[in-house]
Length: 319
Image: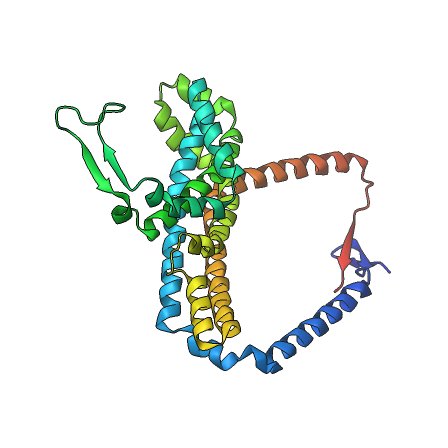
């Protein structure tokens, strides 16, 4: 039933009832309560042991090395990805084929197989030397070193992870660079700006809006992929320590639960950081989107005014 307010006729409207929402919410709440009750009351989970080991020195050491491996591997992968993405768009066919071969190889072989190969590197090459290619020593100049001494498990772990990640990030970077209009390059080039400056100040900031979300997902994935470095073997990451301590104490489930809790905590922090970075790089685009939305709204309203009658009616939605 309509009523008047300030000389304007208002319509009383009520939201459409949706009982399905309440039914689905009740079902989800019941299932969640059953799952939580089962986790708490099941003595086989040994929650006392979980909290006993959650902040132990060995578990915290595993957490620290897992984070360090993730950061180092993503740093190596990001540098390689930017390089390969630029090479993929180069006018030089040799650079393009080199980048394509790198991406093809590291995306086409399993990461676990690659890590095993890195662990066998000291066996394949017991020693390496730096000299003149194909000639070896020339005028007594040659530098050699023992691979087993310098290629430590930690070094092979983050380099192996970084090389693999670089292949995936390269395609993400390339997609981000392609999302920027070529007119940006042309306009900056017409102003006489160097290519490096164009890329750093114009192209990359705009491409980051497209690049950041998938890179955030890859970082979270890398955090969990570090559990595979036991193939090298690197024995200081979180999953390996939890499994080792669990076998030693005959309590594998509580130790793995403790490791899972830490993975969830770190992942949650990474998601928050990712959201903050996305907001930072999306500030200018949000203003553009809002401006475009207001412009389209104004156009629609102007078209609608021509079709309106002299009497205006507004909806008064009651909760």
